[in-house]
Length: 351
Image 1 (tube, rainbow, N blue to C red):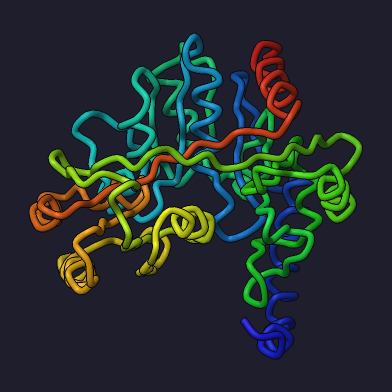
Image 2 (cartoon, rainbow, N blue to C red; image 1 turned 60 degrees about the vertical axis):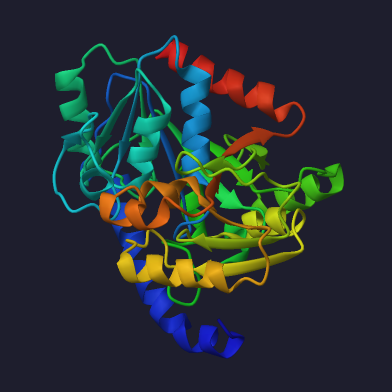
């Protein structure tokens, strides 16, 4: 977005931001109700509209707590073709629970995965069905104030800190920056693996965290590409020169940078966040792949996108292509890992 367009849209941003601020004040004054549950509830969210890395951070918390604890995740289920509370099962599909919950369901045995556009109703339903739950992780719930989480984790992208952003539509913030004061923990995500103390201090000066807030810094770890379908046998990266990358996520620039370092040419197809792939998209991807002028080529997508490609009508068209996804995890710099892990565990144990 150009600076001129930002200025033109700024009055609209003020109106939107004021509306959100009034809503927050109504919650702060208890005019709008906010309920706190007697189970550990950890919220992971952001001020911006998507793209800060909520999914891998939820997965980090799952790995940290489960086992031995009995963990549940609760999401809105963005893009699903269903309504109300759904407790995922082996028969669940992306269509009915969404791509992120489907990813949690496929990757982690022994946890409960639920979706509900009402977080309050979702938690009540989860506890009614499974009162033995030890902890509930709320995905993308920073603005869902009808529930007061016991611990609120706010994510902000290293490349676009909320302190340098503006409210929609002139920026990507869902509310004014001062909303960050509700967080107990702030995580600066997608930082470089080599991270200097000087950069850390500069970011802390920019964010100006409150006295009660702890700030941690995380980075992305990429795994080796995994074949989406059995039989995708082309090795990676030794025998690959060209990669076709297609994504339907908010921010794919870290993956672009990663893949750009391991191939001679990276061709990118960008779809909208949570894009529901169809046969036309698959035909475009296939044609783009065949147009690459080499035999040493593969197709890469994300794990989240892969969940939306499992429908039989799409997988039938894709299964003969060398289609891979790149698994990712997050980790923390230096002592941040130990301190963050201990803070989460202390909260859960205390509650």
